Length: 323
Image (cartoon, rainbow, N blue to C red; front, side, top):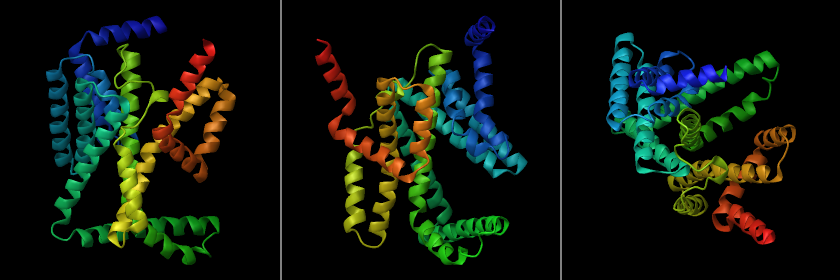
């Protein structure tokens, strides 16, 4: 089976038309598969880019532009706006990955750039939709989202028999949703950027034999200037009033997502150093990820790594002990 697979991969890699066709199908997939788009968008752009990793830049960008035009046209013809929006996101992330690979960016830098691109495009879309009254648009959007969540929670409460105490905490939940929704949305953009960079790196390594956006995940370290955004957001959250304090809180949530990734990389490095067996390693990861204080500890570990550089210290100490 391995020989057959390797033979097929070799034939496909030599055929630019096949690579273009496969990449186009993958990039259109999030918009085409109804209901699974938000899940597929977490990896489809990375895989679509990965298929075109070994072809000329003109073919890469031409394919992505063609997919974008086709997706927008199909969305308009079918009356499904989501098709066009997901295709725009998919091709946009793939184009960012192509641009970053051409410049030799590493994984953390590429993930940061993808996040900046996604945040900018979403903010631009919001400004265009909101017109002159951004505050009213956002309040209406968040209220609508809160109503949908409340309706779903009430249905769940009725079915599970836990509806009695809902009236006490639902109003507080809606206030917090209105206050912190930008931060949670920002976290989803960080996750989307990270998952596609990781998918692109894994796919190019397996398919082309050369990894895009190195180094390996256990060596990931976020760009140093990001720590200033943590300090700035924390200062706003502590000392800011009104909208400035809220902006600081949301900024801290987003920055926590970045340093959670770095903390996870440090944890992965330590687990590999300790040579944990898989039946110990995976329960350990699950135990950390299902508890809020585990998530917080990993994010703080990533932030502390900015100053203490744990991996370099451990490698240096191991090297000194060896000699």
